[in-house]
Image (tube, helix red, strand yellow):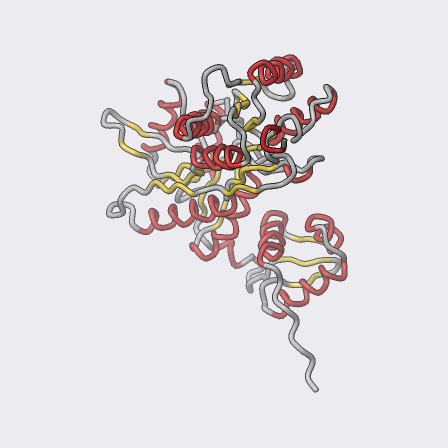
Length: 366
């Protein structure tokens, strides 16, 4: 009697394992188990299956990607495309994974550089290095897009002798305001999802609190305001707060002012961007004996770490992996058809994830 074949690996676990392997070159069983949050037994079973498929090679103490006869990874011979992102530890890692996972099928390999979002000179320096020293044939980039210097940067990027796709950014360039190829989350729609959910739970006054430093805040705020107006909810006097970064010394004072404004206006729900600000807000509510969600419902925007909070935060989740995948696919097609392909602007819808912090309003519960 033959042994039954093992079930296929869950797609998400397989993608994360291979993405980490492409980034680090080799992985140990203990590293994989810790990263994926599974047991060593599960990891060894996954490794056996991937090795049987020829996707990986086992080496002493771990795994690596298969090597060709010249000792190189098969991906080493693919044309390189650059990727410049403003963060390597929040929001962007899943976008990077999506890009790396899509790269082999698109016929390219990713060369990653981190930059400071607010340092326009650094963004330009990283892109220049990739073009001049790494010989990239295309560029994925998330540049600043607000202000005269940012406009000059975008014009410079569009003028490069290689295709450029903006990631989580959308803008125009030149006297006719021509669109730049881009893929981004429909953040205004995400905010609309949050407002409609809270309104369905009976909340009539839904406030807004967001980091003033996030490039996504204007779109999230626009979606919040438009949906509040469409639904006929209370807007006049409702808290609309642009806060400093949650690490700023002024943050606690801003939180207290926002919570005081909620109390003064009978605001029973808040949409908060981003997760870190939302988690800090809930902690401040606990200190002030404001029950969440009993006195104040909260929906976070990003869902990077919202599910780890206590209580777990309801959140809007951008499809980050899909953003990275789509960006690579757009760029590969632009490389193949540089002169005949029309400019594409792709908007990808986020999801609403309902957890513990967006229950019905106090009036509905009573």
